[in-house]
Image 1 (cartoon, rainbow, N blue to C red):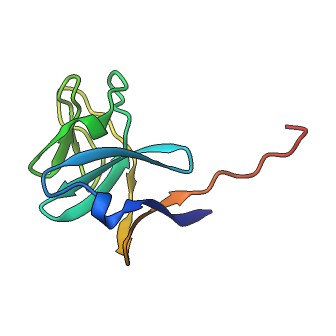
Image 2 (cartoon, helix red, strand yellow; image 1 turned 90 degrees about the vertical axis):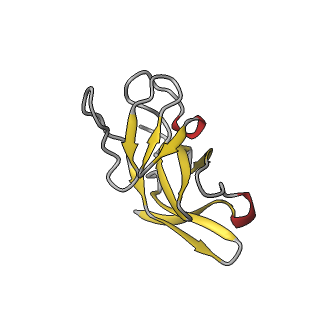
Length: 112
């Protein structure tokens, strides 16, 4: 079941053209500000597990700081050389909080 979870305060969110690393419910998130629009992606590059939140923005993409793989902030899809994909999460600002919609982990029983 998905729920809206606080990522950070609105004042802590990245400024236009910046990215940051954060986390929600144990999931690493890259929060990017693309021309004033906040976008949330999975923070781990599928190429070599680089932290996307340590990268930079070019156009509508976040680039991994390790090998410059570019991920579209709306689809999570990578451009060439090889197709890859990261998760994309809905984001909204509510009052002074930046929220992300993310799947809540299922509770595990003692016998699992």
